[in-house]
Amino acid sequence: MTFMSFSSWLETAPAWVQGLPGGLQNFIFQLFQTFVFADRWKLFANGLKITFIVTLGALALGVIIGLVLAIIRTLYCSYTVNKPPFILRVLNVFTETYLTVIRGTPMMVQLLIMGFVIFVPKTEIGCIVCGILTLGINSGAYVAEIIRSGLMSIDRGQTEAGRSLGFNYAQTMFYIIIPQAVKNILPALGNEMITLLKDTSLVSVIALRDVTKQAQNIQSLTYNALVPYISLAAIYLVLVVGLTKLLAVFERRLRKSEH
Amino acid sequence: MNTDDIVIKVEGLKKAFGDAEVLKGIDLDIHSGEVVVVIGASGSGKSTFLRCLNCLEDPTGGCIYFDGVDLADVSVDINIHRQNMGMVFQHFNLFPHMTVLRNMTIAPIKLKGLSEKEASDKAYELLKRVGLEDRADAYPSQLSGGQKQRIAIVRALAMEPKVMLFDEPTSALDPEMVGEVLDVMKALANDGMTMVVVTHEMGFAREVGDRILFMDDGVIGEQGTPEEVFDNPQSERLRSFLAKVL
Image (tube, rainbow over all chains, first blue to last red; front, side, top):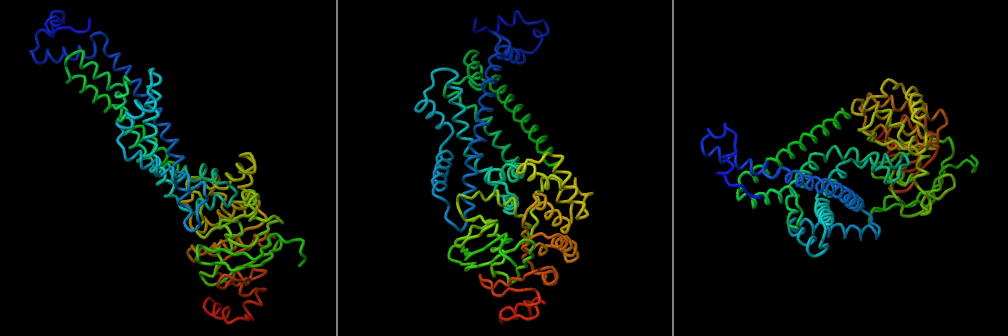
């Protein structure tokens, strides 16, 4: 059974509901239909699982892509007088093109192209991978510029001190520059994480059943939009507030190490 | 002096930034245990010369031999050789996210494979030498300028370098803190450390320097013992420079 009429529900409803005014009765009925009837809360739960997987996957991919691109751009920008080596110039052109294309086209369009032109996934796993790749590649472009601003905010003398002790470029980055940069970019990076989490709501266009898609499904099952979508908004809000709190704790802990 | 104990040999060193030629051909031998003090007007190429010695600036011409190895050779791993050349900067460049102890131990642990214990024992020993053993757990921002520079010196010493390079180590300090840093450098010179010091402290140059180099417009204008350079300058350029700074 996929649909239950208001009148048949009211007959089976507990006695305290019977005494309520009609509008309130209707609202409780909508809540019942959205979450309880046919175990529909499980749709939300399954959708959340997809949302989490795509968010975490894309976040990891975005940070890795962003870090690599940021280091290429920073290294390129560090050649102020001399000409950078050929390979670096090639990498820089690639990076700049990437940033231009990704930041210059809408997320939705990128999803459509990845989902229906490049990958055309057939299975659910395939769709998840496609979603993670698209969002990760998109996020990477923004993360790259965030990380680059962080790396370039660290005084040149820090690099020189590291190199003069005998650290190579990678060790200097890893032990000395990145730990200081992270502190500076955390607020901007947190912003990007929040954007990414909310952007996963677009993956339904490539047939991924994330939490947004599930809310749409419930709407079409119950012929009611208000409760599913308001609930959906509440779910995203709770997730974002939780993430913000987590980032604040992390930031405070990082600040503690410096006086 | 014999030629066996040459630590750094510089031949025809040139450095240009774009069209601006900063070093126009420098030849120099630095012997083991020698304290070479580089003086000269700002813009004369002193700091660039020093930074070329450990390849923080890539020379555009000439050779630098460190322990007989040509550092400009592309097959040479410069990182290995930098471990043997300590450098102290004008602006200290301590790592602000690490404690004093960590500043001093990270390089020996990561690069020389010392254990935490070995590295921190060594660090405390060095801290004691500069009278800062009670500041091991402080962060750089909690230190005065003079303390920072003394830490920067022992951070470099923790790698047990053969040569120490000083790039205007007292120029960023308040006047009352200059003395404590110069004292550490004097003690280091007395212990036989090979040092190349770029400085404006003429008193230090005269007292501690074995040889004074007067850099003038990208070349060595004049060099000699402190007595020769300070008491009997040959060129008009050096005379007018000394007249301004002494």
